[in-house]
Amino acid sequence: MIETDYLLIGQGISGSVLAHQLRAMGKRVLVMESPTPASCSRVAAGVYNPISFRRMNNTWRAEEIGPFAIDFYNQQEQQYKIAFHDNIPIHKVLADASERRIWETTVSERPALFAEAAIRENPFPEQIAAPHGLGVVTAAGRIDAAAFIQQTREILVRDNQFLEEVFEVERMMLSDDFVLYDRRIRAQYIISCTGMGVLEEGYFSFVPFIPVRGQVLTLDIPNFKTDVILSRGIYLVPLADGKFLCGSNYDRDVNNEALSDAAQTEILDKLKKFLTTPFSIVSERAGVRPTTRDRRPVLGCHPHHPRLVIFNGMGSKGAMLAPWCGQQLVNHLEQQAPLDREIDIKRFLK
Ligand SMILES: Cc1cc2nc3c(=O)[nH]c(=O)nc-3n(C[C@H](O)[C@H](O)[C@H](O)COP(=O)(O)OP(=O)(O)OC[C@H]3O[C@@H](n4cnc5c(N)ncnc54)[C@H](O)[C@@H]3O)c2cc1C
Image (tube, rainbow, N blue to C red; front, side):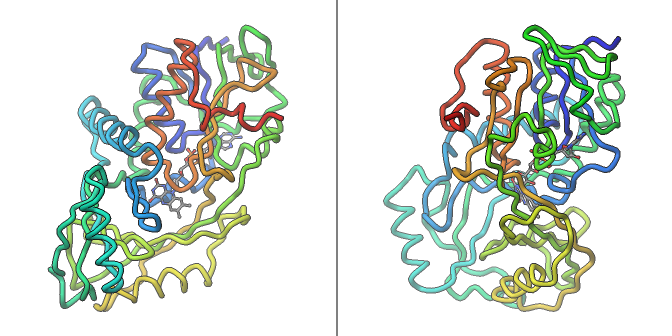
């Protein structure tokens, strides 16, 4: 019988972050991931942006959540001598004079915004169309989520904390004090970090998850080099190998990972509004984001099974949300700290 404190199901961004946080508290963890993992975290551009461009304000709790994520990723890199995180600014291509004016006034009126009031002139006139300049978002960046997951997996494998298999809900036995899985694993808690796989588990069917498919392209742009993330409706993210990630789109209520021509067209149409130099598509991939109607994550214990826990609903912001939310969950389980009501699964109970 394998004895563990926490059995985590799913090793996307959420399961990886939580595994690190529990290990840091000296807890025994065992992570179970399917041999054919879902794509969501692995295809994600991994950008964290503390500003909503639509509303020109900081995103939900960005002042707390953003720096927490940056510290968390830096700490993992230092502790394990791994590299997957770039704390680099986003340069927003301002679409017209009105957008430029709004940027300048909003940023100077709200000093807490993670943005610079001074507009940058376009340093790439040959490759980028930005006649109205670039607005700079600070405290932004990117994780290479696929690398983070792979490196985390290697650490877990090394420490005998990883199982490559599909979790099957029928094999789980829940009691008030522990969880048994397949009569061979006994855990204090089981935490479902399964993204859209949650639908297959039944226990959490009262949470109305909304699948939102997204596609991302890898591009070769021979005449262009930058070390910032560009944004205008989509992100253009520089990669270490000189290529770029470009995306994404939002196909609401679509729960499959198939590539779509319409998504590619949508992404390229947005790209061509500011990229004026030739490029080619190297590859493209799609994944399904686990989102909720109120756009908040879903955390906490099952209402009738205190040992069954959920960590999900990261939507389109897993890179930024997962570290702070993970710590909330750990504090809740280990120190009985109350969960913030906005992320507590209890909000879905009638
Ligand atoms: C195209 C695209 C671009 C994105 N870009 C960004 C971005 O730039 N920035 C950002 O922050 N977010 C982005 N996201 C969103 C981000 O990917 C999600 O917020 C995040 O990946 C969710 O992570 P997760 O670990 O909760 O879920 P998932 O990544 O879905 O992980 C769940 C894991 O559970 C496993 N699993 C499920 N069921 C089982 C089972 N029965 N047994 C074993 N394992 C199981 C799956 O294989 C999977 O590995 C993007 C998403 C997409 C699709």
